[in-house]
Image (cartoon, rainbow, N blue to C red; front, side):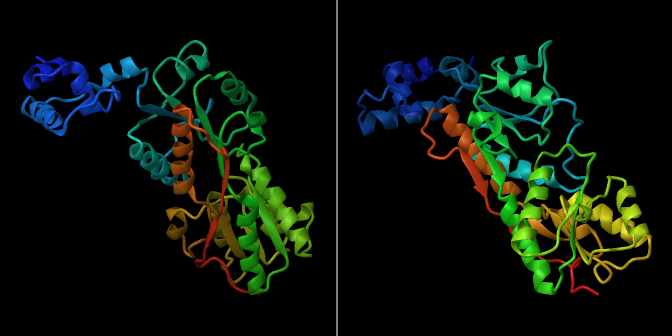
Length: 340
C-alpha cells in the first residue's frame, strides 16, 4: 500500500496537519517544535514516504508542467541538425524550468477539434511560445489562450503588450557586426535575407541593418538587400551577376552557411573574396571551413529568462518589466577579413 501523509502522522503520533507543516511547508499558522519536526521527518524516512505529485497537483490545481509550443503548420524542430538554434534555446528553457521545479513538455501538436483546447485543458500551468512565425492562424490561437504565456522572439508591441516577451537586442547585435566589418575596412556591405522563411525577426534585423548603415554614413539601398533562398539559388544569381559588395551580414547562421557553400561551389574564397557574418553563433558555425564569424544571440539566456518570467506570472507575482531585451555578443571566427 502507498504510504500517505496520514500514515506518517500515525507513526509520528501527530496530526496530518503537523506532517503537512513539516514536510510540505503548509499550514504555516501551526507551530511545531524542533523535536516534533524531527520525529515527523524520521517517521517519513522510516516509511519511505514520497510525495504524490499527481495528488498534490490536483489539490493545488497545479501540474508543475510547462508546455513548449512552436506553432501551427511546422514540422518537428531538430536538436542536432542545421543551425543548432533549437538545441541551444531548449537548453536554457530546461535549465530555467528545472531551477523552479517544473517539468517541460515539447508538444508534438495541438490536440483537440479546436486547437485552443490544448492551451487550456489542464495539462500545463503555463506555456512558452517560441515560434517566430507571424501567421494569422498562430495569432488567433494565442489571442484565445487563458493560460499564463510568455512569447520568445516577440516585442512588447505584439498583442498589445498582453503577454510577457523575451527577445535579443537585434539593433545592438547588428551594430556589433558592422563595428567589426568597419574595423576591417569594409564599406560596401550587403544584408542577406531568406524570403521563404516566415521568421518574424528577419524584418527587425533588416530594419536594424538599414538604420545602422545610415547612422554610420555607409551607403545602403534596396540593392544591398539580397534574397539568398534556402537552396542558395538567389545568392548564386547574385554572384553570377558580379559581386558588388565586399562583405555580407546574413539574417541567420543557416543563411550564412548556405552563402558560403554557394560561393565555394563557384570557386570563390571566403573570406578573401567576400566576408560573411552570421547571426546566432551556435555550434553550427564551427562546422564550416572557414568557420563563421557571427553575432551571438544569447539563446540559452533567452530560454532561461522566459521561464523565470512565466513562473512569476503563474505565481501571480508582480513583474516590473515583462518585456525583456537581452544584449547580443559577437564571436570572431574565420569567415571575415579585410576587403580585397
